[in-house]
Amino acid sequence: MSRLDVPEGAPVGRRVFLGLAAFGLSGIVWGSKAAGLMERLLGPLAVKDGTGLLGLLPTGRFRIYSVVGSLPNRAPAAWRLDVDGRVGAPYAIGYDELLALPAVELTKDFQCVTGWRVPRVRWKGVRLADLIDRAAPDGGVTAVGFESFDGAYTETLTLEQARRNDVIVAYELDGKPISSAHGGPVRLYVAPMYGYKSLKWLQRITLVATAEPGYWERQGYDTDAWIGRSNGRGDEPA
Image (tube, rainbow, N blue to C red; front, side, top):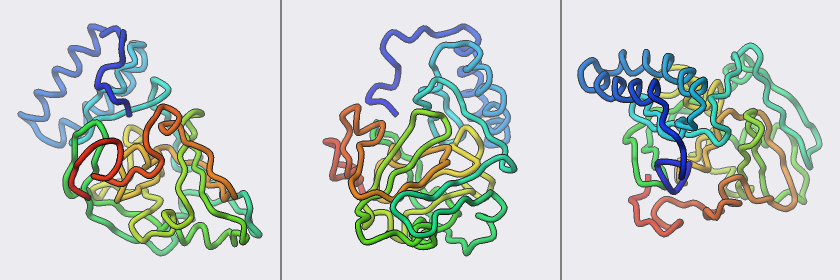
């Protein structure tokens, strides 16, 4: 995400502009089915156009952001999550194995630090705390780092934050598998914090003694991104 909706100096390609206009109309006239179709069509179009407009692309009720100017894509069968660091039992888990673990469901608002909010989003996944415990972290762990397979996006939480019941590794959004545009096949969801903490395209969880600032923290955003209490905003908590 960015503090600005339009990246400074970003050119607007004609095909993307027309596509976004069509998308806005489709959401009004035809509803969610048209929105899903435009997500599949416009994501690749924006990448090919080279405009960087993936910071603007609306998808359903969301705006889609990518820090690398493209929509990373990985099929569920090819996805793997590594859990490592200061642990006694590092491991890797595939998509089907993740879905076989005890699941939790949350219905919470998704709040972006730029101001927009999506109410009552239904999420399904596995408690992050359960994945952490399986790795048997040692007594020196104080924080958890997260890595995206886009090659650039990273995030961090304290161990206490990561163990909250409303922090999950999610694989469903509103009753459907999470799409690439929304950070799938698997992403982090940190309910009580602004959306930039909910890292997309998750591929690695690392237990560490000292937290390293994540991608957005290095751009000046708060590390503890509690909704309504950080980044100078007064939004209502999720």
